Image (cartoon, rainbow, N blue to C red; front, side, top):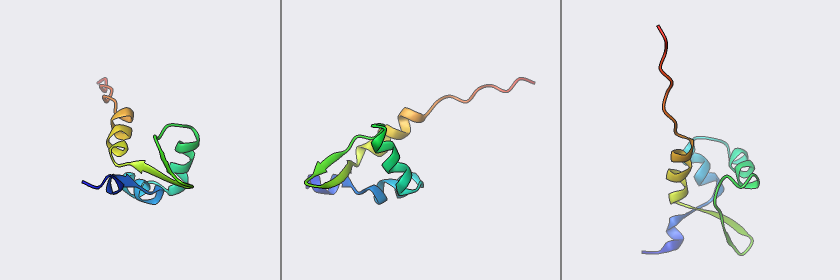
Length: 65
């Protein structure tokens, strides 16, 4: 398996989460997203999509009747 295929660009990561690339860049600056530098390029491990979603997932609060 080629590990280069396991790295996403910022626009690819943004598309996977259906957000803008500028939002992902902000998360990177805030160190909320794990990145890999390939020279001057920034790549995001593919598994980071799942981790990021899991980190933001919470149980819904019960509605009082």
